Picture 1 (cartoon, rainbow, N blue to C red):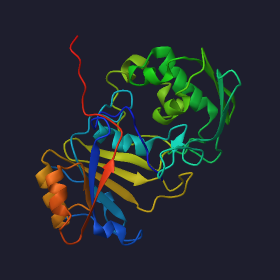
Picture 2: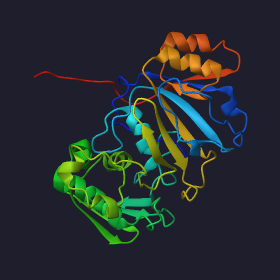
Picture 3: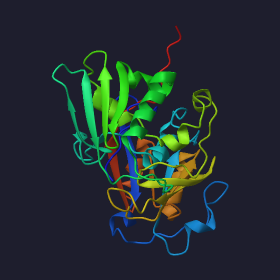
Length: 309
């Protein structure tokens, strides 16, 4: 699926190291069925649909889900699911973090000699998860114009300088800028592309403040959020028709923890298959724990920066 980088996510300080620990079972075989644990560390449990011989992966993460609305979500915990549910226009290469024509909705792009007009060509095999049809240039144009015309604060800093966005045809999008926009591709990495047939019915004021975007969330990404229990878990099912190919697992359960020690103990007990974001002291101890493989990963983001002016 490739890595997704969300520069806007409030989860890290500068280029701090992110600590991720995966159970060694994740590395053994893509087809290994993990099954569900007998109990969750916190209240609530996924619905019975998450069992019965499916390949299910449980990942623990500290924090709390805020919302599934990309115009409101701020924390990395919320964006973990959102970023898997929605595609972006331009993706990144998982190994190099360079802009890639293989991992986003656009498989080609170019800019005019004066640097003011960008043209993106969309791949033809991306489709919405509700079966309503393909992702088209109209959806891309709608998403950008929804942000620009309504000054949607979550993404307006990315779209700054873009004057107009239009669908030349079903698979071609043109963006005209007031002046050369050096960060256009970075913008295309950050903005989640939304289905016009759903979001055109949501008043911008509501989208920017209170719209919950309850499951099932319709996007075009590799997974779809189908169930959420705040304070406990988020359940995602694989998009078998995903344009890059069906994911190797059937379901992903993101379990939230308020206590990182409890999360690590659940990893050791096998209640979860992996976890992320724990203190260095815990990572150090896990490096010598039999059956556990650990890794430190550098991420781009920040926890919280506040200026009282």
